[in-house]
Length: 113
Ligand SMILES: [Zn+2]
Image (cartoon, protein in one colour):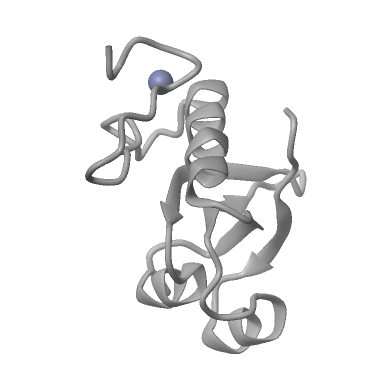
């Protein structure tokens, strides 16, 4: 995988404030640690404007999270698609969406062709 995610961290307001600046574009993986201490991804997602605010809304939905920030929404989209196809997260029922008004293609499938 070209870019690793940072974490896992406990999904709480205090931790988010400490590890993630606000108003950053990026992606996240929500999940938990299994008995062997491995991070198990349940879902992946993206926020093009404020990743921390998005994760704050998700507190309580999962125990832990990982994240990565990106300079552009396009890079975040590409990374989210890559993880979606590589991990097949059990709680992601639909393909990651692209921002309205873009013609971005997923590099891993024909979703938008
Ligand atoms: Zn795809």
